[in-house]
Image (cartoon, rainbow over all chains, first blue to last red; front, top):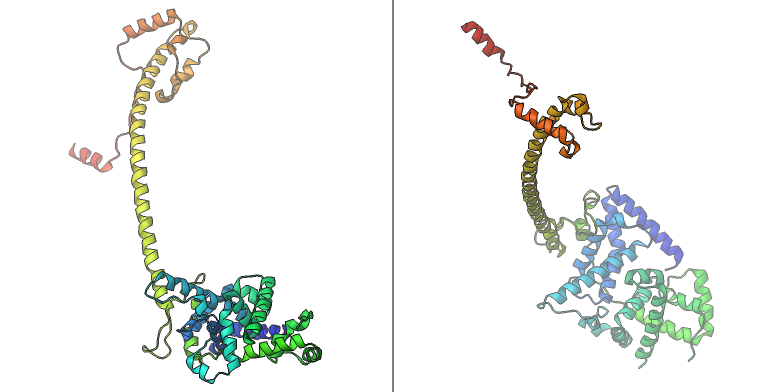
Length: 184
Length: 236
């Protein structure tokens, strides 16, 4: 996504938010339609496998409850990604405190890899997915946000709570590693 | 295979792989790729990663929108607390997200705990302050009684001194002024201020004093009760 696309996207989101504040229900529908799939995909890349729709819904609910704090310094999607990632981390922490719940470890984080997918996925795709699981959590998050979600380094840094320079380094390290593992 | 040093093109490769570059930038990347094997290899990886992108389930947009806090409600929610209620679009059978139970204790239990704690603290403070003030009041009353007694003595002595002829007045003490002041606010006058002769005269006068104060005590006005006066007059 280029800078011009980002500016255009931000303008559309801003207009929809204003319409929502004015009481236009369809604006909320449009906003959810614009970002729900990306949020679900990002959740998958974070390793969320259960209650994906619930997570996405909670992300929207939390975001809409705090819309007054959204200053549009970043794009709405970046903000939503940040909220969603925080929710995922909160749930993992809560799961760790409850021994009955199976802990989701970073190494469990896959890219939405399901048994059915494996049957239809090409060998290359399977190699890529396996390679992504071997990355460190930070490398994987940076890499998937950059390649699969097309986020800029600035946005990635904000979502993951790191710096733009660190995000670049993680991306290039991840790319080099994935390239090597795919061709193994 | 050596790596490419063209950072600008490398930065554009993810967007190029996704087909999201505008025509002008796309052409320049294509031009570079024609002569750069490392970038082509990198592009292959990026395309493979993009194709391996997970397919998320279809989201229930209507349910999400129905669960959103309305603008008026959202303005009442502070911080990043979850919505106070969740609208269930599909009826009671639809799964309610896990944020609802999280919201309930936030609205009730902490506030009840907080208010009872505050009440207990307030009661404790009230009892402490009340007890302390009682102790202080008792002590003050004792000292007040002592002070009143001494002031009466002083007022008497001051009166006696005032009645002395002018040459016997000690120093430059304005005795008349002292007498005119209420007994409780008389300036303390030390007996050492008086000479032996003056003290002897004081003792003489004390011996000769019959105990009656020369000043009429202030009488409180009788309670005004016109009705009783009338009845008396009528009775008379």
